[in-house]
Image (cartoon, rainbow, N blue to C red):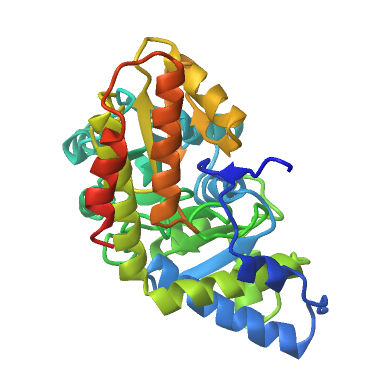
Length: 378
């Protein structure tokens, strides 16, 4: 019998069968009334997911494309931005700014810690010329959740825009775009949205749209103005990936049926169970402000994280390792999107088997018991 594989990585994540089947529908031409009506409903459903009344622009790209669109549309060469760098994806904001000739002030946070809103407020007071604050909702490289609601309250007192990489947080961690004063939220399709890679989304506030009118950075495909015009006309400005839109429609229907509040609660309990299982085995978590989409932990020895990732792979389970200074030191188990209690049970059970194989001493079943104590609340 061939080996069965399990996808427990923080992107791409597992795709529900209903979503996969939706992709198999016959292709519609994207300039027809039928597709226009379907896309219109999808756009409205995306607003529910983002918890916004703002426009949501859909690109055929990875989530990084939505991040780049925020930089390209809001700023001019020589402008100043504040970039919160608490991990690999916070650093990406700075790399995109650099590529466009935007000056940025780095706010470096120790990996595994959340930024303090007070630190952002201090930077904004010291540098009143900051036009945009870039941060993340969930810093995937460290499984860390940032306090976006509190950050939004700080930035809203200024003329600056708040731009959030919500790629691995949307549809997982609580996120209320309008209520929390977020001006642009950048998202990818292959995480909490439960569809394959290939779509990106930028939800854009009126404040951000107004700022975009003065931007002089080069842009064509990612132009906010082009997508705004497309929403108004009912036709996307460029050819959309029709089959992925079918998949998105199905995934959004599933999220609406569950309700976004219950989606957040499910992920919260899955995360709590995973953390309980890991710590019951005597392992140490990385994040001091853990997100709900994935859990990052150290192995029993200094470089055992990489060993654990490889042993998971040998069992047919894909998890993620650490990046940069954390490479080989941590392992990351995802529980986002199309995930439920038995995904956690399997992951913790496999971890116990791996630790036994490594000769690590612990009480067999302790991780499973701790996880199940939380999961019974689902």
